[in-house]
Length: 241
Image (cartoon, rainbow, N blue to C red; front, top):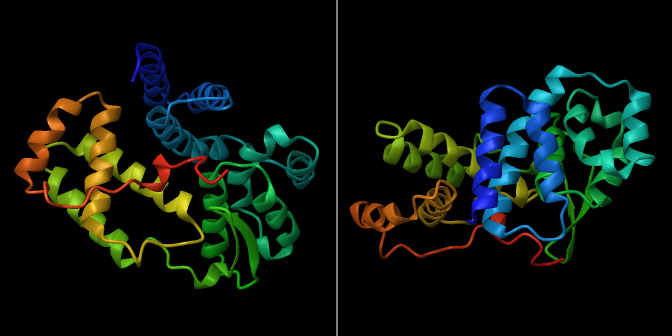
């Protein structure tokens, strides 16, 4: 990670620590709108973006007229409208939901919208393009992260590794795990293996914190050298575009 992104990420973290979530979000949105951002940096920026969105939503309310305007009249606002969809009765807005799923949005944002549909137990089928495939899914049939056995196992592994010695590192790992869940939606993790996912998340966090030199020692200490290396979906953005 070059010095520019190190400085940018430090500035974003400072704003988040100071609860200046809108300012942090604006910095992130401006950066990820550029034509090329290194994948390791993009993963961190988008994890911070997801951290900011719920706080932005709490600070503001939108009327339905504004929500519809953001969806249909201002494509630059479509990303920002997602958090405000949570409080709607989405059974009444299935067309708007489908139009957002069809839009050019971050996979994590679409994943967040799918999560809202899951929370409301919507049994209407929706369509989404994923990894070059056209997928039809029913939100109420998707395993939530609270009951997905692989997610629960990954959380338990990360907690055992870091809860006592480095809770801040653990929080970062959990943020990336949630981001991985969102970017995969409407799929869950039930067919994956937990340990390789946990190992990959730790690798990304060490890289993001510029502590790559500690990874080898950690891998040996936790007897992970023979555990398969895997590439997370959050590292593969744009691969199928």
